[in-house]
Every structure is written in C-alpha cells, then in structure tokens.
Image 1 (tube, one colour):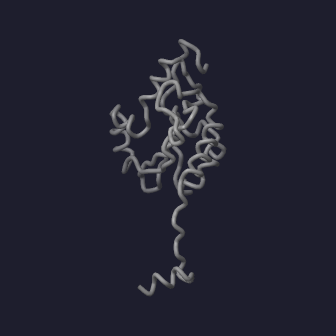
Image 2 (image 1 turned 180 degrees about the vertical axis):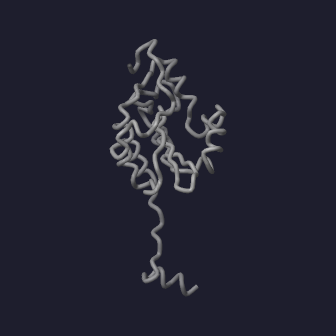
Image 3 (image 1 turned 120 degrees about the vertical axis):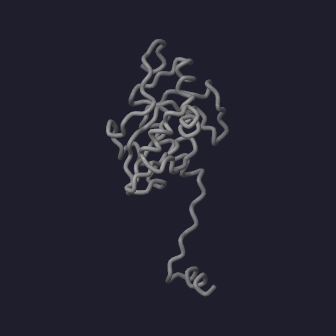
Length: 168
C-alpha cells in the first residue's frame, strides 16, 4: 500500500502486458513510433520498448524523450546489471529514496514528481509522490508534448519548400 511503513517494495520493472498499454500510452502517441512493442514499465513510469530489428528503447517520463538504450537484448540484459547504467537510464536510485521516505507504490501506481523538474521542481525526496500510473502517464505525456518544440516539417517533393531545396 502506498506510503505505508513496512510495505513490500514493488519490482522496479514490470512487464507491460500487465497493463492497459493503449490507455497508459495514449498521451505519448505524439512521440512513439507505431512499430515498436512496449516490454516493461518502471516504478518511475519509464517504458522499455523493443524494435523489430531487436534494439531496445526507453520512453523517459522524466525527460520526455524516446531513445535507444541497447542494440539488442543481450546488451540490455548485460547493461541492466549495472546500478550506474540503471540510474543514468531510468533514475533507478529514486526508488530506494522513496521507500526510505515511506513511498511504496503498488503495481498500478508509480513514483513521480509533485512539481516536475522541467518546470522548476526540485530533485528531492520532498518532491516525490506516489501517483496512479494512468494519471501520471497522461500528465507526463501532455506536459512533455507542450514543452517539446515541434519537429521541423518535412518538405514534400511537390511543395514550394521541396522545390526550393531541389534546386540547390
């Protein structure tokens, strides 16, 4: 139970198949390629995805980014044995900090930031909170979409911009 002293910590990563992935990732569709498969979700609301060619990717709820973290599952399984890699990739050090402060999210909850660091929140235990996973995923997807500059539009061959670039 969240916030109960002596509660049993949940696993840092749980299989994505335990969740209604479509619901949880709905607000992240602007960032996610459609052909990758969600594999795991962390206690800090980050996701691990598998790509068709075997690479693994992280959707970061903290940074609002989607980046490759391993070329294949062998590399990923080796990397995840390193606490430094887990901290650099998934901010894993915050789970025991939260637990030390009585924050024990259930499988349908996550640790998150009361005031997100991208909008001025502190990286401190006092800014950590247990959230409903679906609510936090929705909030983070919306927040990062609003804070991320739009990508440059691709110039289509028949467009004025496309014709200009073709002349050079």
